[in-house]
Image (cartoon, rainbow, N blue to C red; front, side, top):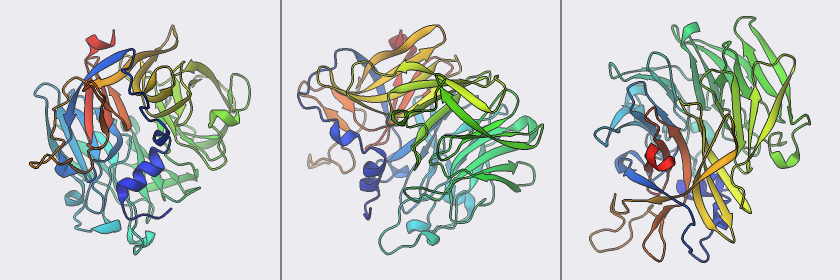
Length: 430
């Protein structure tokens, strides 16, 4: 697939299902969930784009990664108290490069993570090459650690030449972070599962897992997990210094074709772990099922179970946003299409003792004038097509990316075009 327009490629590759989800009748969603929208600074993006790069810091502020194709990536801080945003990290400035085009550090695409120290862990990633550029033009992505207390950023060396960074997960108690790289090839890419020594900046490779979007999690015993192409799961134990290759089952059976958990070319699978580090949760991007794995079990098979459909009354779904919040609640932003209920972005939750997952409603913007959508001549601004006004003026987001629950109980969702933070107050989620 060739295109010189990064957002076109972004939509084709990461929102391919959404093209089918048209508001044909433009009926109002039956159950509406109001969210307050905040525009991510537009100078930090191009084409109004970004990904699932969002986490809450120990200071209760949100840290959001942006994508500015052919130019730069930024880490933006959102303060819920003042409801303001500012740039915390200018990636290329910290690296010391002025590269442009495909050579630029065009994205912060990682699922950001916060260490016990309060430091924010993330990394940079390549954009999309034009027809005149080679993949070798991109030298590689850099893991980074930002300290909100000091405002300082430590930049670590490129772990694998020409690869971007898709995951950086810290284990500060052991002085390491686990890194997953991405070559960005299709249909099957190279993704190196590595250990980064945080003190001296050296790497140790564990395995080329060849699974796209490898979100690494670290469990209660300090063991790190990474998905492997074909459905197996890599687990590295620092105590034993051994890498295991685990099989997985769902409800006692091998993962079905429909689950997308063992796709032969890999499929985006969103992982997150419970606050106590004992339960792993997963959802396949194009699936409609939430899964969990008990990480305290013994043996060479990771036995998972189905927790139920994310959305019950839907024909198709798209879920690329999953998190487990500090409360232990699992949250997902899910696009669903239904002939009876229309097609909208929903906020869905699951917690122990509550089954199946609960749909809190379709997200609607309570402040539709949060950012200009037209210029001085009343012409639509470019890259603002990710918000739709229904016939009665209700505004709904179209392209979701990330989700994060805060300690205050608010749920925060990222959408693109324009890059927007939607903040849902805890009181509206009851």
